[in-house]
Length: 317
Image 1 (cartoon, rainbow, N blue to C red):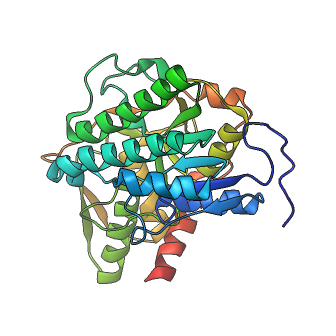
Image 2 (cartoon, rainbow, N blue to C red):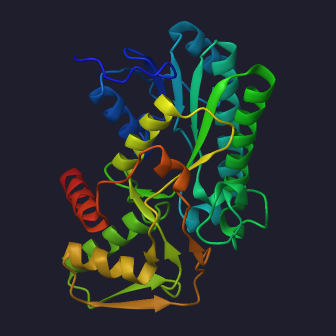
């Protein structure tokens, strides 16, 4: 395989990269990208390694001695899952982060990328949200445990940089979607849930689809393959304690998203909004100027990305 042309000392050609969470939405995309660029990707299935087990994780990293670690493993879910299971959203994510980041340092891994979430920012943060908005106000209550765990991960990365000089960095992606997404209606995020709801309504000949909330909150969506491109760029070129927002810099209402999904899927019925259900954060648009200055811009449009994701999911059925 041809080695990557990049000669950055932060992630040199032929680097061996351990991807934690390689079967998930983010981890699988990062794995695809790294492999395509000529890097050697190291992985372990959940049955072989529980990343919450600090001793086992450190043992693996000492054995493999990767040049870098991408921490994409996390317990994730939508509003319903976060409201129903706050304990594992807090505790599992804390355990994974403590285990992988501390284990990487103990094993002498020189480079690490921790992937967080845009939900770390205050519910009513000024828009677009810059990285300096962190810890400036109350969080969205529906996903506070998950957000607190991710904030702790940022703090852990910063602490290892400050105390040990570790070249560890953090990235905060916006709402993601794409191949590998979770389409379970009980635990999925909004975009795959909409795809499945409209698909099943079309299949069953339903006259309408009832959706949660008012449809007025605004969200930003990034295809996971674009995120993977950004991750590789950061691994090669970024080395600072401040987290980096990863998004497309544009948002739309949930109602507009629903209309786009309905058109892609081909459902001709009505959309009804159940306003007794929670909306969540009113708006969440990231300021991506820090990433843009590094030369990043997304290449996959929303409608195109939804269409390819829908086709991927259909093939899996």
